Length: 110
Length: 115
Image (cartoon, rainbow over all chains, first blue to last red; front, side):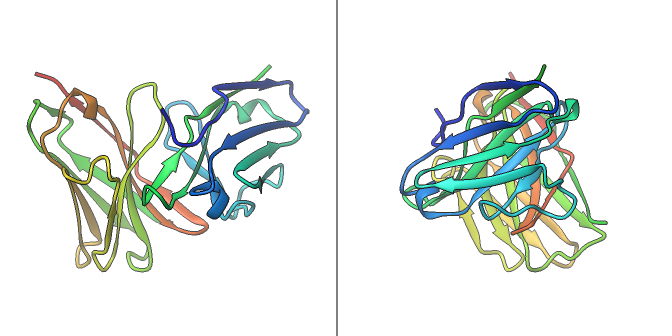
């Protein structure tokens, strides 16, 4: 059982916009930056968003992150087939004194 | 272009100690935290802990009693030891160099615990 809650799956058609959510609490998302990772099949995860809404160099601006209270979201616009992957949210939990992950959302591009 | 290369035993028996090494090539070793993250087959990510170049550590409380991390700054390497392994420790283990916008991952090492 993950500390952060993500829907197990999401799907959308190419060219459309999809939002992946991540729910936590005041001791984690509510009080810390959120990070998002993309994991393509058979590969190591890749950082997509850091500090809640910042993109590392090389990450397309189709990807954006946001936070409201104890929930965070990753939005992907102009969806492409190569965006089909598992997406994980992560943050620090002050109560646990540990980095925590969501269970992951498997995105299918129909 | 920084490259993280991991190595260590891939098959362990219950009660043995997992030992992994992560070498950092082509980039700075200082001013980063080195995280170890694992992923059981078909499952999500679990943070094991982190260490910086000075040797300051944070461990996941659920694993703290069994985990030791260390660094060798002369060789640009970091190390993970996990004692008394069980089948529940079977996973792909990743070494990750991180600092805000930077997140460089090793190739991952599959460690299987089986009698």
